[in-house]
Amino acid sequence: MQFENREPLLNKNLKLILVFLIAVVIIFLVFFRNFFFQSTYLLRSFGELSVDPAIAFKNNKPTFLEFYAEWCEVCKEMAPKVSALKEEYEKDMNFVFLNVDNQKWDNYMRKFEVNGIPQVNLFDRQGNLITTFVGKQEESTIKNSIDQLDIETKSKEILNAEFSLIKGNKNQDFSARSHG
Image (cartoon, rainbow, N blue to C red; front, side, top):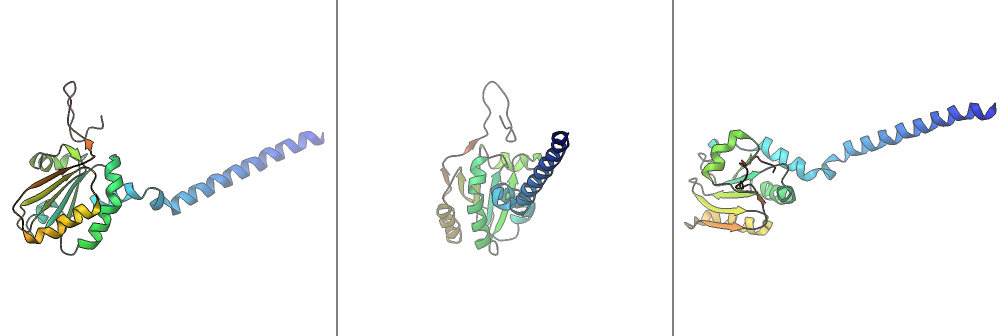
């Protein structure tokens, strides 16, 4: 008889311990979510805090325009570097972030021939495209190009590196928002 009484007590204790552990994990994730999901969080905040492109091209400031997607691993990897650049230059420069999954930006994706992400376009004060970076870039490379914007070089540079391909293939039609 004593054995039968202990079994429900053990089950009750195990359930309490399990509930406690789950609560601790949830609380831990809530408090440290920015640490674990920092890149995705940064990308999402870029889009939310972005200057509208129509305003950016008319306010007589150089413009940093990035095409990205939240699912893009290279975009996530570059997000902390881009965030550091944004903090350093945001007083003197427009920062525009356009998510390729948002149909609202299709006209800009066609205009700037986006076929891989991340794609960063740098514009001078008059809205002239000066440099395009496609794919993974070092922070120093982008920083040097930003610093050169005031020199107003007339050459148009395109630098390609590792990137997420968003071109279609012959068997299927893909758009920039395609995850295939």
